[in-house]
Image (cartoon, rainbow, N blue to C red):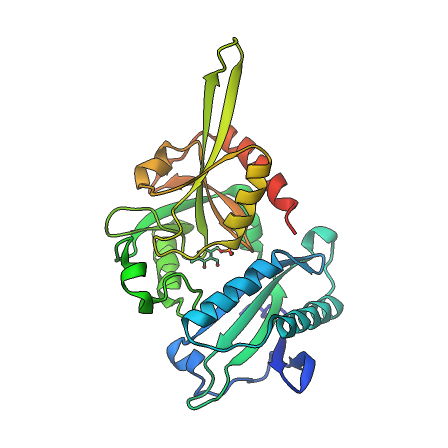
Length: 313
Ligand code: PLP
């Protein structure tokens, strides 16, 4: 067995304004906690680089939205900020990074409904190192398969109790889809709806790019870079990375687009990525065994978008 990655836990506790540090190697939750027995709760995962959490406000805002969707009343954002600062500082002091490039931490915020009958949710911050696989996939890219998510792209509006736009703890199907992909020799998944739309990855947002070169009429050529993602009302999680990258790309002159997208749009794209807060941009090399775009264009666009994304705080 490999030794577990070092984890720091900080519980939100009104008696501890900066959060209460807890021993991650000891049991800390009641076995009756509804987060454990029902997956009833919400979470966020974000990246701290050099001790600074990226897109912190966007993550806190999405946590609030997810909690509201589940009728959970959670502590104020200042309490989360204080507990996050405690957890990140503690991790960096206990387990200093061996080089600046390795100074990346996963900061997870977790809210459960607590034990049966609890008056308030159980909330904590978990800080751990970024896994080597995710870091590698930023460089090497990934092969994905398309998998049917089993519902149509209108269901989120029709059936709000499915909590489709919320980041709930019920990720068992997302993890099962990833295991299914791994058994097929793929790295990741792009879900499609039963009406044939591209949705998202189990832990990421889908992005694609098109380069459109045209004559400007005066003999010069003009290249338009277009960045496209599935439309947000199709029952997918609104990605904080996609949102931030779209804003940066727009400022850098890219054109933006929102689905609906079909699998053929992915195959016709010049490049496709799965983007998320921890792994960042993972270029998609193959979808169901078919090559996506051209390696040289993918490499160039990935470098361009990585540079834009690196500037996001
Ligand atoms: N979609 C799903 C289902 C996710 O779980 C995630 C992140 O974990 C994302 C998209 C990407 O979100 P973000 O960019 O905020 O990390």
